[in-house]
Image (cartoon, rainbow, N blue to C red; front, top):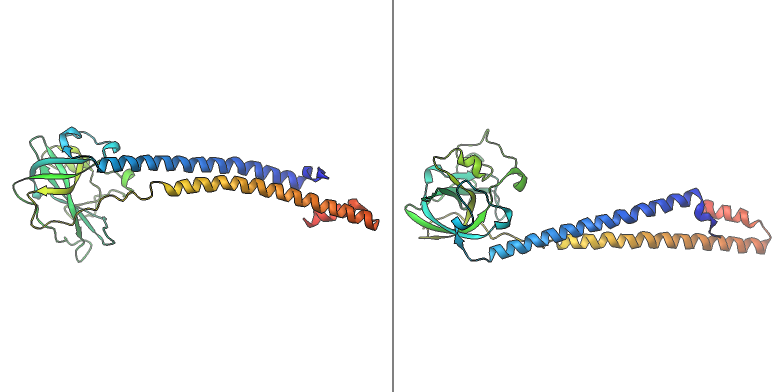
Length: 272
């Protein structure tokens, strides 16, 4: 009865199922790996955000680099703003509005650190200068989230200087910006969350990072791919049972009517 499993049509179906099973398995495994990576990154970010602020010198240095493992760690640093070298970072929407980040060097005895003082809405046109609250004069103590230098790979933003209005940039890249300044920069930059003394008027604060679902969607996808394995195997089994049942019924009808059962089986195969 099950000799039909060796026909060309069924051999092709067997091959398809054998290909789908490992494909679905590895797709599920890949999604599970993404879930684990994103969950670990989310846990690390949460831990960093909840850490107590430490002096900037403990995590970063002039001419150094900030690894991703230290991203969003709260730091404190004291110095004086250099408003003459302030920069505006384009393409930084916030709360559904187009605008700029205001990045001002904070000069310290060791060097300078770029401080993202916050966000301002765009001006009347794309090239007009927006209304930017002035940086405080005198010495201030800044508290903020430490961030690594931005690159095209980490932001997905293509960096270009040609055609931009003076004082505007696309990436907070400390190497590129440092080449235009009269002092050396720390490897990372600080996203301001607090300042003493407080400014009378300041840009809008940058919101706390949204951690999202921590990779929960990837976990759901991995389970979905593995369920597809059961669907493929179950469908394969049910089709075999149906074919066998139809052939058995054809044999029984042939014996009852006295017709050729083999002819009936060929007709069943042709119809299926």
